[in-house]
Image (cartoon, rainbow, N blue to C red):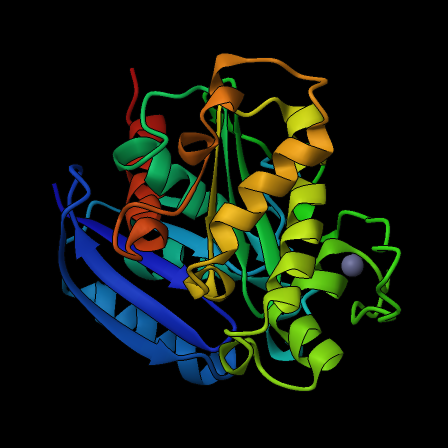
Length: 294
Ligand SMILES: [Zn+2]
């Protein structure tokens, strides 16, 4: 079965052709400009590939409520040319195949849960920490949407007693994204994270904030495993610091076998950075099965 996959990002669109086993057969990357420029390129890429369904993992916010008049739209994005844009219908009309649709980070969560390190778990989450911070959540075997979709990057945090940085989020200042995203690191320390690799205090503070968020996710969602991806995790010493802080901040309140082995509980992605595009394949496959059942 040939499936199309699109990872729609703010700076680039990754398009791929693959199959129901998560194998990627070919891919291209197209810069994200305005819909007028970019959409015809995307459609022409997929048009002659004989795909049976397309899956899209998309930057947000997006409307995932199938009962809504704006289902399939990119909604209030700061990328103004794409604001209130019906991306799903554009592909449905042009390609005439089922189109699966979800957030980019839910796509990554699904990729890992289908073929990667959270396979077989009913409850897991995927957090990406880079320019922005996003969370994809699988709960009772399904991607969590709720009234919109999770926006766990904007979890409100308590500032570390020794940190006077005001935070970069234009909405909340000191949410997780405002305190721990790549741009927040650069604004606080005056240099990019890649230049700060040797500064232990940078990563101890980073781990403190990420762990605070993880503890809150653990309390509310009870995930069986947490995957952390994104540019910030390329700092190799960060993951052990996060695990240590999660343990410390949980303070022994929750006692499960999963938490006994923190190396296996808070983990890096396992699909060679293909988790997003593979998740999009699975979104396409799921939509195909939904529309062809019975
Ligand atoms: Zn925020």
